[in-house]
Image (cartoon, rainbow, N blue to C red; front, side, top):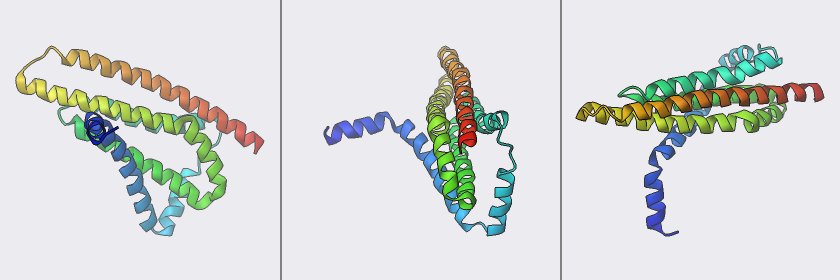
Length: 194
């Protein structure tokens, strides 16, 4: 592959790369903020995060609710003129939350948290993050198309784009629920074994 092909590939996928970068920057920002927080604040956050009961329903809800909220925010941003910024902000906030939750747990549980987090990472977090990025990319394009349509008064194409966004939203919500249920089931089994 020569430089021109690499540059063309990057240019063609620039929105996808921007969405990935926002998620990563959010996680890095969360880690940096976590490092400067006083220890008492970190302990209080840890107490708050560790209060959850580790049964299947609670694990499922903990794994599903926040990503589904972020997905809904990204979905709704596709119908607004400023949705590009809202979708990227939602990815950034998701990255911050992920870094905070895992950083605090690792800070106090140490290596014991590593096994549990890897199971969750490979059974749900990785796939959910990927789908959030795909949804943000679609919402970004939908919002941009909406602003072009408003500018040029062309009302034919947004219905088609809205239909695609709706289908992806409902499909991704179902997939989120399945991944969260699978992750919760694996975590419950590991708790019984370990």
